[in-house]
Length: 115
Length: 114
Image (tube, rainbow over all chains, first blue to last red; front, top):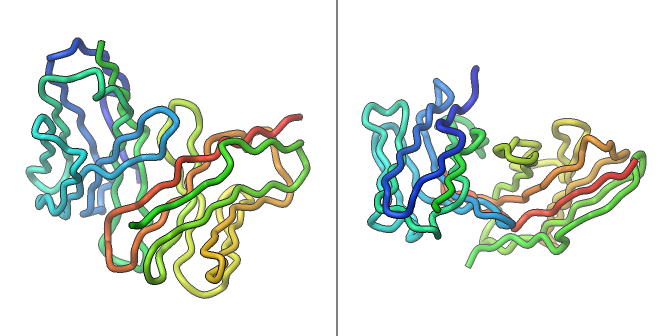
């Protein structure tokens, strides 16, 4: 069990550029989540996949954001036309479907700095 | 609206002393409750969770948490703090009818001095 893997860990981009983050969940987990964390705040839910289906998107996820999980395994989060307000850590997490109160396990996060 | 409150931005404690990090929540029904820890520039590590049963839950690294339904609290505790416990701690809740969305508090920074 290698845990949730995210890359790149750090990304600095110029305003207006597009960026893409990748997440590889724990192998047997069919649920995958994206959260965003800004300095001094707790993580905020962005979106959730069960297998390849995206079942919910937060209002935080503007039209410039898109997430995919094409084969129900890894996921990508793309931000188009980045803005300085997008600077944050983007956390991916995963959990299994079975069990009660399934624990959600987080990756190390991907830091985005928009300059 | 569902919310989690961590009333202390920072908790300071001397090594070897007991520590408490407070968390209260406002969620309808009986939620699942979680504690996570975050070290600098790292992701969140799961510490413990309350699902049902015994109000005292034991977790990783000697941490435990006490669920109090009447006070809607889930305080994190440790009998003897270590300098290495210094980190950012997050309380989170999940509604039992929601299989996915965690709602986090704003975090409490724990500083354990030698």
